[in-house]
Image (cartoon, rainbow, N blue to C red; front, side):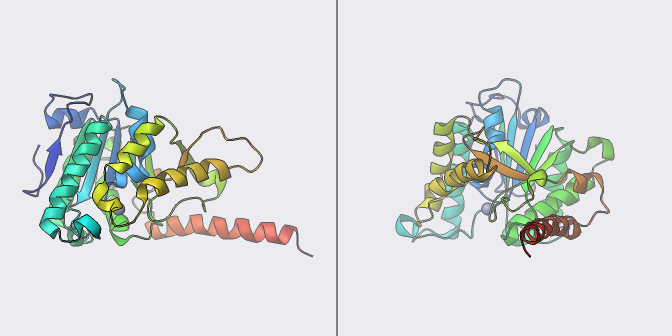
Length: 288
Ligand SMILES: [Zn+2]
């Protein structure tokens, strides 16, 4: 397997189902693929995908982190760490998470964020084309288009470009956008894709705690990620008891992959329009 950047990292964990296998062979058996912007985005935002494959011999989770993690905030014991050192620390944290979660394969593409934000960037395009052509996952997890982090949205758009460039028969049957720097509680209930995040709770906690360099600055991602899943489960349905102890929500992005003429902005605005209409209808129902 050849990736564009010399500092890209390819890791087949010994603890995972493809231990000892060549990376290309591990990629080929992927059933659950997550392509996301930063180290820790998988563990915070796509945990249901990890949990579905954890300890299974018939499901293979592959995680792909697109950026090099250079721009992250740093304080406390990491205050004097240089950009280059921080990239190394975050690479190792991601490897540790992949080992802990028994991932099938972990790829870190190490692209500068600016390259991911450039439509058609040759190195980014080549990596994504190779990854999406090298496997036939049943479900792909990406960022969701209403995220408020520029790099997350750019990462999603590059992935959609790459998926739309595949021959129609090779496109994945299901593509989901996961919560990140904006949750998906605001989606109308019939547009939410609820994903069970309640399996292996101790693992869920440890996977986020691995990213000590990100939590050290006072951002308690470890508590916040698990708190969001608990809140989603509890507030999902007001008149039903909780069926899952933790839930993540996703947006179904499959129509954007099946129809390359569909505008991502219009598709997303349509979901926002559903929220606007739901709010307005309920208020009118009980008004004079
Ligand atoms: Zn991120």
